[in-house]
Length: 116
Image 1 (cartoon, helix red, strand yellow):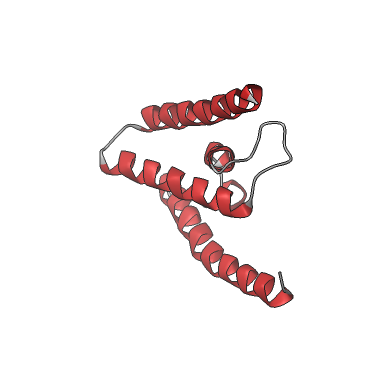
Image 2: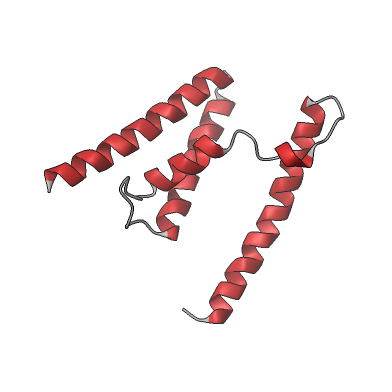
């Protein structure tokens, strides 16, 4: 890979990250009744991040996994979250379903490693 590729990738990530963090901060601001706190802008995304990496193919014991796989896992998580939001599924049920998806991804990883 060349430096220009990584530079272009960093530029794209920066261009996507700024609006995403602004939207997250705006949502926090509305939910807190106008009191914005930048330190809590990403709260609640830990489960999504971990699930995205495991769904994308990272192993529990480490050593494998790709950035592309993590991005695909993130897209799957995004489609899942969007579908649940459009179906008016409650937030507690959404978190439960996301946790079950993570549990299934980890169980599949462990099962596939033990099968070899």
